[in-house]
Image (cartoon, rainbow, N blue to C red; front, top):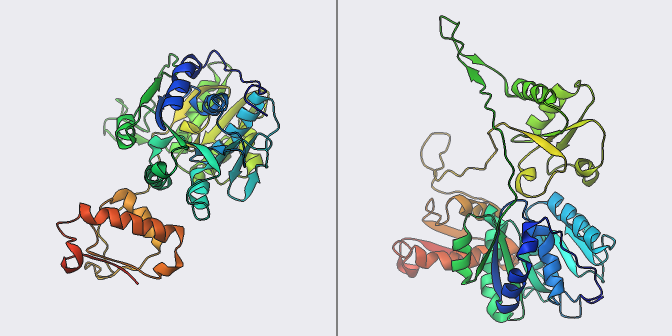
Length: 398
């Protein structure tokens, strides 16, 4: 089915629809385009349609398909469903998605949503990504390890694939760095904003009536329950509660279980597809969605009028020093190649090490290949300490 045969319409209320011609011109005239758009601008759902209108994504065996990455599985599924619905096709036909353990694509698919990890895995068997004529890296500002390696690999691939188009979408942060790295133009799209009333409800209170000045400390779960009750008196509308992790979501769901005429819906990455899709199902009464930051940038939860933010998030940290049980510095540390890759997020120059031994390199796993490529880039960057084979730091492959 050609682009002229598809019913390509663009919702006029989305800001990205107003810049459609500018975006199309940039994609047509440049190999790499950086699209800066705030949450709610519509860039995620409308970009593949703009590419289809330009004649991209003709299909497997006819020039290639459009690959569209998302940082989370639920986002890949929900975006694929939305695009398929807007194109009037069945999910898995012209528009499909692939996440871990699930592949809803077909030989007719022209747009493929997937996690960035799926695209990384495909590099093992298709190093030039010949299956694709367009790659969209969405939510690049999250700067996960997968996204960083994908961008680095694509930078090297583009000269070998002059027919390949790369579109990087990001929030307004880091846009200039992406553009400078790829020497690409930036197209900016504004987001939709609404007036917001902010109410601060601290967990620690110091009542004036208390002569001893002892602070009153509320439990986080208790404070969330109080906030939901307060908002319930404001009027109709669903509530979105941001929590740092699965355990906190379960505790809060138990505490809110007896709330009358209220549906409690958890939302986090380990839930099954059916359980995650409950958040999009129609409902009556009030709904309280308990979510991790998956609902912050990766998808739009419908019907939300109130938000409760705990102000905390679970973030991986990296420590550059390792100590043994005696408290002295560890001299030798053994780890999987995946652990060392992960450490490059917090320590990009691997300053915690003066010697790296990459063992069993002949296995040529994706991790090993990326490690060796990364170390080749790193050695000149650490030339003061990595001065060739006679220097203070050796990178050995055995």
